[in-house]
Image 1 (tube, rainbow, N blue to C red):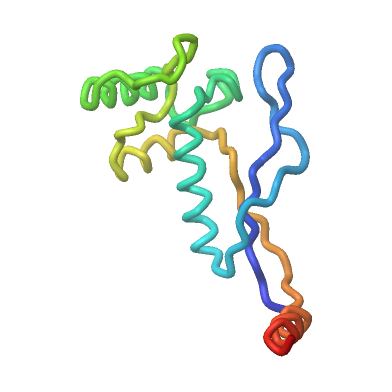
Image 2: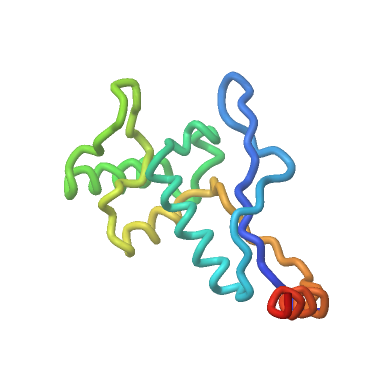
Length: 141
């Protein structure tokens, strides 16, 4: 059997303090290359990092691969370089977000620092014969 790679958006539930990862998720994209799926996951995660604070999804001790001070210094350097992050609403806060203007190297650095992710790749088998037959029937009909 051939393989496909599903990009899944992870599920989270709120417990009055943080959002906790829950079982399951929602399929978003099907890729036929593992490398393509992993690139999509990285892109979707980085977009999510720009929208939310990782502290909404984990405590300081649980969300980083680096020391908290190093993470804060990195984020502050992005704000110094690109300016304050613009918000949609007055109640939005921008602490611990990836700066939307960050370049690819900075995005990669941020992704290495955090342990929280919002998307993942799930490998599945593909029933190629039935797919091929369906396509042939669609063409003939």
